[in-house]
Length: 169
Image 1 (cartoon, rainbow, N blue to C red):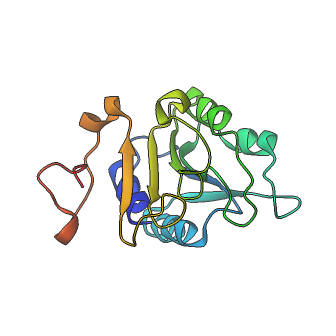
Image 2 (cartoon, rainbow, N blue to C red):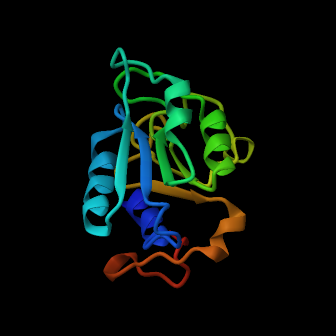
């Protein structure tokens, strides 16, 4: 959640005020949704939660249809925590980038269980932690930023998150 908040801080305020929508699945991890809901209220962003018909899977066509020219960010779970459903991150990323939106891929449930490459998926950002399937201890999270974006982004950090290089954690 901290990494997701840090990413969003780089994109606020939106350069284009019409690009003020955040799209994610209603089955996203609760603490991730809390981050975006709090920022939405504070910064005048709109949240579009894509509905699941069965509470287990996410319809790809519905996710793709929700992403449009007003979308700023698409934070998605690679694998849904409640069901283990694997989302088509490649298709979602392609659609988002087609309209100029960025994608945050939460790999907390997939890293260590599902083979994937952030390069092959071409995601803008990926976040996760080591407690689940990477068999690490608590407190070890990670943030991937697509290399061509690093010099374009400036997180708004204070206190313990301020470092010499904003992405050097």
